[in-house]
Image 1 (cartoon, rainbow, N blue to C red):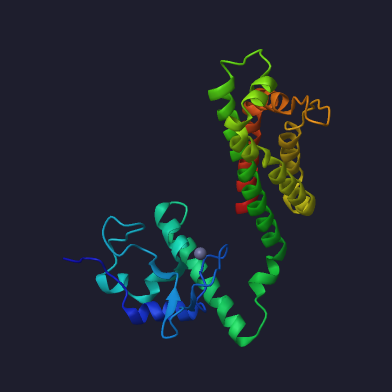
Image 2: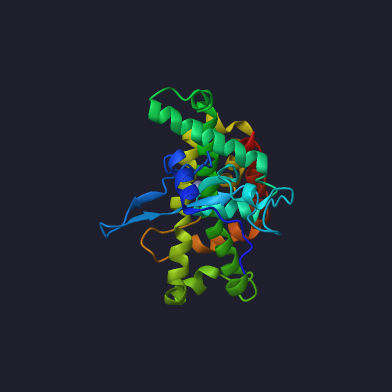
Length: 270
Ligand SMILES: [Zn+2]
């Protein structure tokens, strides 16, 4: 027995057409229609999502609607598969009114495109959208860096903390290099991620504002440490100093990371 009020194929097609096949989430807007390798077919990564759920117990379910109203085109919104999933995973964050606004804006946007007229909503929001791009970029870059540092901390606490506390860690790594090589190479890639974060901050500092930039600066400064090397490999305490830095700073790094995420969340939704 199926008690879902599903859309007809025709309703789905029209929902897709009305937004030019793009996801209606204004922060996504990805294309959902394309060619299949078989020339007789097309592919779709889009979905006609229900604004209020198709069946009882679903997200944003409205018991006052009739079955006809629930499967009516007015209750549908075209989204990419990942946005469709997202709105159903957290219905509080994506209430009915917000989804109706997305739908209206996406259809308005598509009407402007097809009429070749200016999208008045878009020109107003130009600086905002640059800020949101900056937020996304920072969040991604910070995440990529932080995950490596946490991995480094785990490696240190499981392998070195007990056995090499106060002992020369450099010796242990030197004498068992083969054992640690892959892990340490992965950890060393944090330098690249750090550089990416520096570049984003440099490019978007004005959009992000002082609060975020200060916090990122504090985070990055915790990663500075000095080490000694004789340049030909006979003596090098890089890893010893690195793990000293990580084990001392991991709590502060986590705190700054959390602060940055909170600031970004605040300005992203502003
Ligand atoms: Zn999407």
